[in-house]
Image (cartoon, rainbow, N blue to C red; front, side, top):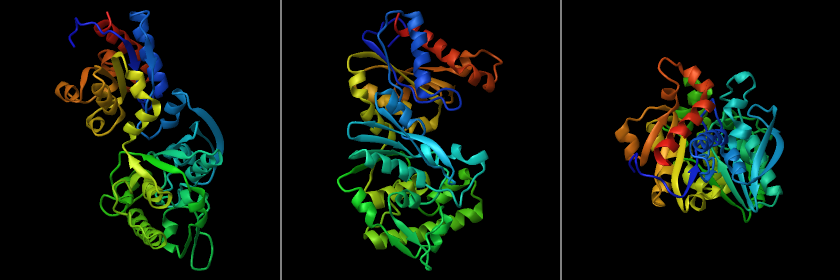
Length: 383
């Protein structure tokens, strides 16, 4: 599309969050406002998206899912307010809502003792509501417990040699002697669990959850070694109990091993996060008959090209024959790279802030700059 060509059909605004400044819904709202200011009367439809990590529940709510709030156990046991998104028999559960790094009291890391128990409570609530399909978004968690807390919340018993229940966290799994999964199988009978994640790491080893993601959660070298050994013992116990060996499965290392726990003990299957979320949010219906799609995120970089939301939106839009443009807080891809990813244009909020503007200033002005990007998009593609 050239600058002189005019777009016909409605416009779909489908960004992910701009981390640290705008939620996906806020980004969509401000970009849409800019478009409408310059091209009044344009049919603009907002569809905030996510890739399975933080913001997944918010994206589902914006697409019409019902919010179900509850209080659950946070990563270190403190009560936290969380929510799941429900529509008909499907529940969207976001691990970061209950077990997220951002929920650590005072921001103090707890790599050895943080638990996924609260995530299990979210799943349990979905089951109580009669949901038979659970979409589990992984990412951004504080724990490295292999999903042990997840299944404890669903009724599993984990005990040491003395018959005492294990305390929370991955490190305690080295003392696991008795594992009873009976109630879990009953709770999940007839229920489909799908993991939304783009992580392909195994559970253990150099590419495993402790080694790759543990340091982001405050784990030093000794902690990483301790967690790796504890999770190996956990994987042995799970294999013995289930007859299934999944420690090497791609994605087993996602979210501190939550991927492993969900696949091995809940029978979950894994799908690329953005692909799954676009299906759930009805992107195919939204883009039908569209003349333009606008997507974006906080930073458009090399990672974007490997399964992040804007690349997924671009691929889906291309499949529908609709041009797509990107808006990013920072644009770290050169023009050949973003064009190669399928974007007809890319707008950087930092550049729109003007010469000399600091990153902090750009972030503070994100809403205003997103509207300015919307104005420029409308000027180029809609007038």
